[in-house]
Length: 249
Image 1: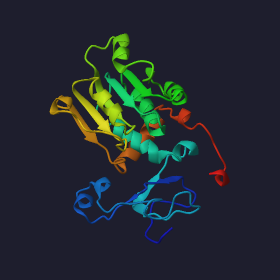
Image 2: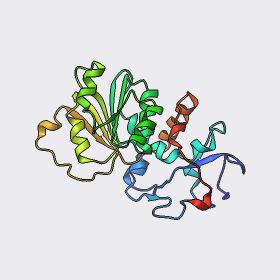
Image 3: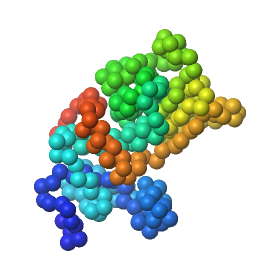
């Protein structure tokens, strides 16, 4: 540890926030560090991914609850993306449509359920991932090749469409399908990196929905929320499907 490090001891269980910010730009000075335009990502713009030792500023160290299993702490980075996206809008008592069953989308399913969503309907075309979505708490894990989201709404007795949408896939077709199944005034959070055609045919497609894009997660506050949810019973263990020794990565 460096000479200016306080409140930590060798042997403490910690995790590291992977966004190294400048600390001097307008957003950093205003406390919006997650929006720093000069952010450097550990393992992307500077060394760190899968390294034996990692060098980060003390401001990026999160003092973890030692009761949380190491398996959980090891995925706090993608878990943070799922947390920030899913909890952007109130979900308690609402219907939530979740597109994209990759690991972050799967964790979003569990978070939405934990936050009190009445229905969590997740979509994909991969049967294996859809089975994982069920384990993560999905009310319905929908294979879009077999049934439409509109049909699922009727089966659940929904009359107005979904209140909250989580677009985690990056698919333009999935996004347009989501828009067609939201209620007026719905909230949509976009995390997936866009691929394909995202053009909309007119302002009517989005005039009754509030869309919000997401850049990863909100530093520090998201870590607090992740830890709090795990401490209060959130279970994301099904998303860890395999374990390998380091030499097999």
